[in-house]
Image 1 (spheres, one colour):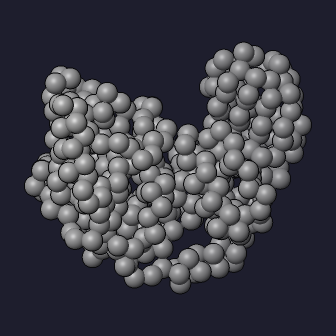
Image 2: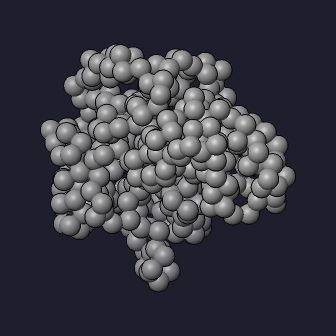
Length: 385
């Protein structure tokens, strides 16, 4: 099987798979391959926080043109996977000089499958873009074609807790990956003082309670497969429910806009985490973190629509606040604005490459320890002399 993910999260996903009991786990670019039985496939869809899809490859071949592609697809016995009255959808991703239009590849694949059924039975399956019985994934790298069944169907970042009216949200898979990269163990204080619609807080809440990432999902692709085994699926879900625990975390969020906090509260309620997450309407400079340190994760504005002076001043103020009030905390910040990040005025102990949507970002870790401000003052005095 292959679990697809986002750039920079391959290592986190590989660890998740090992923890689930998957075998022969190997990292690739934006993907992790692994082996396992049906229960592992069902668990992967239910549990994985940093996977977008779980694919089951059924055939690999070389094709330098559309006719070879059509012929090879048609050689697969599709009656193993789909009934003649069934519905299907095809998704294609490619990086190839031989094929330059993903929709056209999807169309040729559909033609090959439909023609096979029509020739063998006189009846053909139809396309259903919303709730198909079978979701087929075609991946072409140069002339190498991989045909897979998509056991997730809808992308696994769609957890089911987020309203559609959310403004500029961070993807749930990105959010979960960012938290897991901090090494947070689901205990102690976790803060997001620029929480927006609450995605980071909710993902932290799910981790703290050991709730599988996709517990709220209504349906996965594999549930429509011809070889679906409801008894195994029931056992996987029952075990997941039995392992949910009480939270030992103090999860706190705030945002300067009241509308964002309203949306965050709605999303937190949908995730059944009302009693585990506290949010308030506050500017960052009004936030007072609790004693004892902890983890802070922030996704501040990147300043695409602001003058440089304004965004620089904002990042400088953010750094000043961190030095003043966040002693004992590890503060993690994701941003695509590398110039503005320098205005924070602290040395990052880690810098990781991640993407937020299509934006290439750096994910920085700042450890705010006792004496950070004093050491900085001395350094500045030294420079003056």
